[in-house]
Length: 197
Image 1 (cartoon, one colour):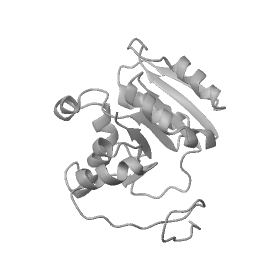
Image 2: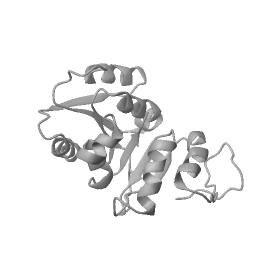
Image 3: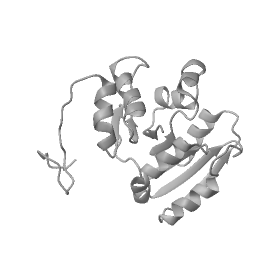
Image 4: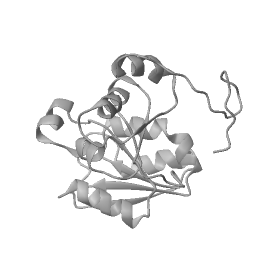
């Protein structure tokens, strides 16, 4: 992608290669907190090494995680769709991604169902983004089939990056009963930027 390979960090953009050996939880706990972004590929299976790294990045990395599908994309982040559920996880994801949102051509906030949870409403999120010079349009869906509605809104917006919080319900509950985060991690085939508080 035109970046020089560099031996140590510098002010100008460059590619720095570093190899770490150890369990995914330990490695992500070391490199994650001093990273702006952790990029991982979407696992083919819910169990295995790639899935271990994905979960470690989300739960131990303390940074936004960009989950990329196996098929290459020429452009990511020009038409961003924010899946908004009023949660702290969604708010932290958006806040951490402000530099990406500032570079986007279009930002759409999608709220599925009534905004009756504690936390900021989509209008308040749009006002927050406006303070940073980011104009966002809002879309509301019925909220009866959140996953289908979110994916449909993403496609309608010609999105190239979905942004949403991870595990706003307890993780054990989603692992047992399923949930939006588990669906996004294992079934969604679009670039996803997410973060867990």
